[in-house]
Length: 402
Image (cartoon, rainbow, N blue to C red; front, side):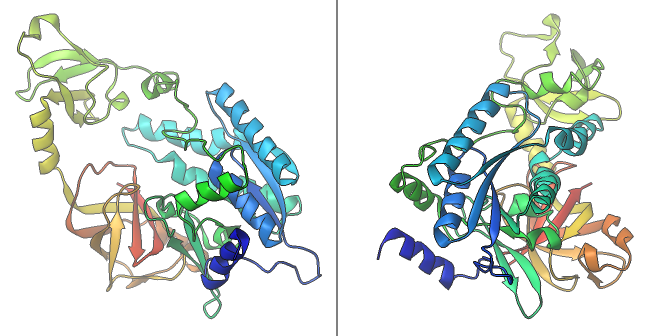
């Protein structure tokens, strides 16, 4: 059995969603693949073409400060499309990204919270603006290189978001804010595969991205731009006090919103407060209202973090992907990508059930606050981050931590 026969057998056996090869009018199903210039999207396009779909590649430009990296990725994406013999499109979504993601990112930091731009980029850009453009230009579906599974239940006529087979690469957390109508038109070809297998497929087919490293960090900053320097272009500096745990003023900072818990650079300690035996100093607390940083040793940081571990989390701005949420059940929840999945009970003063957005009679319910009580505490819970819930391996959705 050759490689493609093995791959097709995997697809046929698993329930990961793939549409029919042909539409009702007899023409081939057309899929636009978001090609980023990386190995995952490259193999996604390759697999879909080999299965028999009509495939086109789309590189969409988002806002980025690393213009050189963007050009390199565009060239790699174009070369991959040439290798595969599929059409290549360039789509400029920089304006959409600035309006929908960058503004959210900056405003969240401005009020002292921690944003998660990747999650909202998926909903608003990859599965929003890109998906809309794709349909307007002849696509039947879009596909991306995410490690997640899209399971279609014919009886319920619903799509369910399931973890990818590769649990080390599973990206369902980042897709937790997708809506049912977005999932219904999306394909995740890598959902059944593990990363080493994806690399192997790329190598066997001599793809130029086979050994390319995965991107890290905040995508639009690149590797050369410091987050604090970037934020200072948009948020005015506001000098404030640096206090020790005794409440004594020992230094000055540029604005509490520019710092994160655990950081040990960027704030100043007055020369007269420095001693020869002074340990390394870290940010251990932030007082947003009064623009104050509290600093201490690494041991102080560990002790305070242990005290501030949270078993109860309040969240709002919810998104539920498929079936209605049952408050009598116990689910699993995590507060960060690859964070520990901890059993959780949800409570809400309203109805016993809370349904997904497009079938809710009253959408205002989705802005209500819900309490999540975990069996054991989460570490490093940040306001503004996303809490995501699962039933077994199915991602139910989540919300923004208050």
